[in-house]
Length: 307
Ligand SMILES: C[S@@+](CC[C@H](N)C(=O)[O-])C[C@H]1O[C@@H](n2cnc3c(N)ncnc32)[C@H](O)[C@@H]1O
Image (cartoon, rainbow, N blue to C red; front, side, top):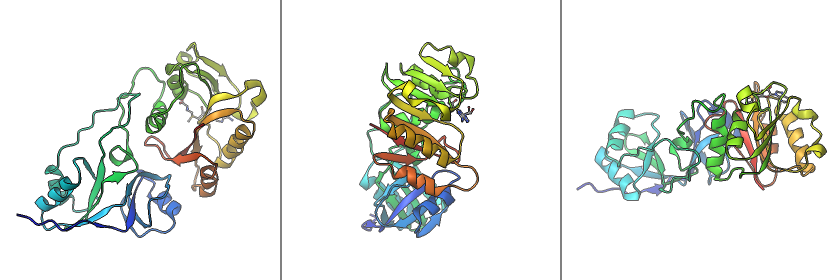
């Protein structure tokens, strides 16, 4: 019978970069130890990292002498494991084939988070597994795969809001008031109206007529930066997906915060050219808020502040 070596703490945290944003993650983390494609190992305990799709918390180093031993060692820890393979693909796939299958069904929005813990693992070399039973996301590689709606929304931007609401397990309730800045063509307004919230959709461009006609949607075709906050009063949620420089969005958000004009915020920070890490840090430093890269975000981060 195979004797399994005892797993030992790896003494690092592993950060899986959002696809295409390894450089941003490395710049954000500062000090890193090793980079294996999207998997960045950095010293110290897990810390917030907006450009990480998933953070492997307190990973273990498991020496293995065979494929069977690798699978046995993982199964001895827990049932569910997601493989991230950057090398030794065939050997990793053979180990994976000996683990209980994970076949997540597409997530139907809204849904609760998966209850069963999902660990992540990789082969650092043919004889060493790096495995974290606990990760920051309950989804494989931090990606929520939704059952998409191909007919209701005018574009796929709605998936970002579904993602935020699913991760945080909070969303506008029926009757809540929302302002949706940069709303055109109307994917976000569609999500909010479907939840039964009242939406003031603001954009210089027109909304898709199908969305503009929704009974809970009121349209203002004007700039998000010229709104008179006093005329709007305090709303339950402020959403912004406006295309603008991050520093301009930060000034706008500060105005809303100082005026006490919204209780909850979900705003996309869009980068052009080099990533403006300084402004990203200024957003992250706003008390009680968080910054994340959603699976459907491009070169952008989502800043969230809940009441
Ligand atoms: C990425 S799109 C928004 C997509 C939208 N969230 C959806 O779900 O369909 C960005 C929008 O920002 C709008 N925009 C750019 N500058 C603006 C401004 N100053 N005021 C309002 N909207 C602006 C653009 O017209 C564009 O419709």
